[in-house]
Length: 618
Picture: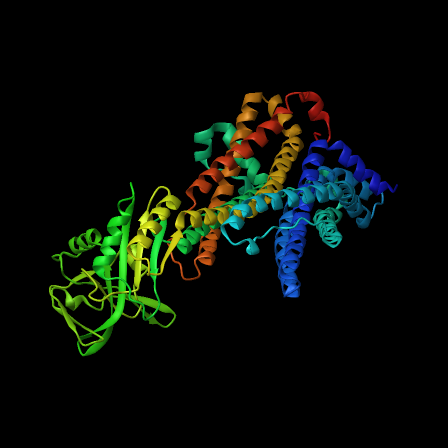
């Protein structure tokens, strides 16, 4: 074995704590890349089985593209995180590198000692990571198929979807190549830097820390609030900017990913809710007769509404529409969409509009296209209190005195509004209509629909009435949302774990490298309790700095996710993920505090005199 390889192996064996966390980070990175490649392979195999080869090439391209994007994200995060572990290793051996250079070692040999660490870590971490990635793939597909079970039961048997678990040699080979390249790139960055440090600077360990007086200057407020320990903590953060910058970056990445995932979960749930119904109802009856069919009169519709209300505990919102009328307003002819609701809700709308029962109510809110934007307008303000004359196709005229205006109506009516019509809410539609809907809110939608079907067949056996169970559709929507959340939160969770391994490793290494500093402080009178308070304040200051960067960027990421989700027909306001923000705040303080205290606990066994005598304090 070469001397450079032996030195690398000695360093791995010597720094057991750092080795453990670095290995864990690499295993998680490899596992994520393997799982992503495995999911892509399973997706291609599943589509090939259900599509009989149709459009397989296109699906393969999409899967490979998605795997490349997500794998690239993991690789980028891994380089940032894992390279910091190798940088810490190189930092521990700075004096050793200086001695080797002074005895004739070349830059290439110095870099090789760090690169060999990457080889040794890869030889163990990649096989373990591949096995863990296959396990993650199997577990993820099992959870997905469990959630898909309810969805498959809802649809026809020929549309059932089961994700296939497949172990693809090509996918494993791709993950191994990507993982090895990621680890070696992570090792090469600090190796290149270590090889460039002059021998004398390396021996003195002056290459890592270059300070000016202003760079470690702290405010008087810090001293007043936290005393000497607070001043030393602030100076430590300023003096070791590189170490704490890596910690801040890792925490920031975790915060951004978590808030983006929370935003996706929240707004996708809202999107699916809007896509399913958008109304407060668990069941729907709808009259969907074609042209030429008789339809229902208003009296017949009210009779059916009354029968539906016989079901215990149900509330019903009935809406009928007709578009066979016109009206002339200011020399402009409008197509009138007449909307009739059940008596109880019609009277409530009259109270809101401030008009007596029997009046017509105009929906006075239009959105007019103006370039790429849609501008809200109120085109019928002048009709308030006036008489509106409506003419049917047969020439029959109807007059509605004291017209009322509404700028907002319930969602049950919103679903029936015409976008370019004059929407007129009336006490009843004069002619039979084949467009009628009954939105019902019942605790047991399935049982209510049995009652509704019996009532419909009994009263109007010749009418084409359909029935929809919104409760079941909501369950399907929830399962779809959960299915997406499993993969998103799983992906984000593993990325956060990778980042946290870097946080713990960096803090532990930083504390261990400062053993000599702590011993000197103890020799000048500082107690172990004072050192503990100093480290606690360092963790607090580091956490605050990470939150100041991470939360604004995370909220921006959450908003960008919101824009992507709402780019379509369904619009709803942005919801700030407050719960996730609170989790981030508590989690950041907890992780940095526990990591710092755990590292500090290992200082209790050190001998002050022996530590000061030691050249590098380790």
